[in-house]
Length: 420
Ligand SMILES: Nc1nc2c(ncn2[C@@H]2O[C@H](COP(=O)(O)OP(=O)(O)OP(=O)(O)O)[C@@H](O)[C@H]2O)c(=O)[nH]1
Ligand SMILES: [Mg+2]
Image (tube, rainbow, N blue to C red; front, top):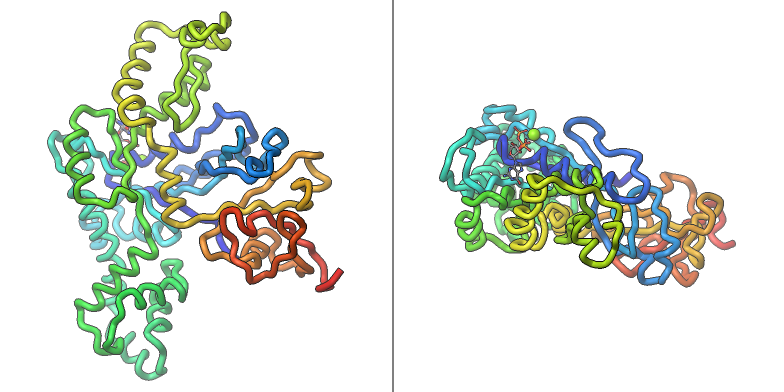
């Protein structure tokens, strides 16, 4: 059965992984229904913001998610996050938490590399000044590639012999080795296609094997680079340097500590804050705008007011937001996640008995290329399926691909008969 997507946060000690995780998981200032946040110290539920199907059907006023929240068509969908601590240069040789760290990674579908872009921590996470954070991007990637490569090369002799003896294809042989990383035949096939290798596997040079492992790392661990601590005055020059040499699609600028701070202030009733946005209103702001009650917000002392003003100037007005919400959006884009809305009734979008006339109670995230049948098995397990309908009462087949706006609202009719 297809698993739920999992996003792993990686990075050296003190880069801000746990702060980022906390900033994304404490969603208690929002309206809605949040039955869980932290599962254990390493795993937590974050909230991915998507456009909800309720918006395009003009039923946002009736949208009531079972999990997460939906405000005017912006929906927060739970997604699982993993804090993978203990990575330092040399981890693949057992330094730091070494292989234990790397084994945790196997379950991740995408990675967020949290980089301390202020340069105030060295490669081991110790306090310093003027460290070049672009080095972290290089060594972390190298660790992952070396880890996969090392595991493969340990056994390459016998892998080759078996490959020849049982006359497997290169895809079959590699998938046997990579299945432990949660790989699939399709992933391995895509890597080999992209490389267009001519020689048979048993003649691959070390250089070729390295190319294959690199391509596999790209496919299996698409990575968002979160340049964190942008609130620090040393960050600017490092950001410009990294921006010159990296694909902008993979970079997000973040201040995790600012997001944690703003969400806490909102929870305590000092500000109104739209998570992930640049909008922070204080009591005075709202009074100025003509609400004599100031939105019912509490008065802040001067020290707190200054901190909020500072944060606006250093982070929100300069960068547009604290960036952490975009981290998940970007990871979801790299993975091509598609939100699918299972409903009982494809005309009213309700869920039948539960929830009255509330619409779009459920939303599941599936990877791009998933079929209607994949979604069915994820939602309903192996119960027999009679037929499936999408919006407008149109029948769809199990083999149809789901995509945003297409076959993404589904009603599964359980039963044996193929025709009603
Ligand atoms: N200025 C600034 N400091 C931050 C930011 N995010 C985190 N920090 C600080 O950096 C330090 C390390 O943050 P953590 O979140 O504990 O780092 P970590 O990556 O989880 O570290 P390990 O658990 O040791 O691997 C803490 O003192 C945080 O307050 C940020 O956006 N800006
Ligand atoms: Mg931590």
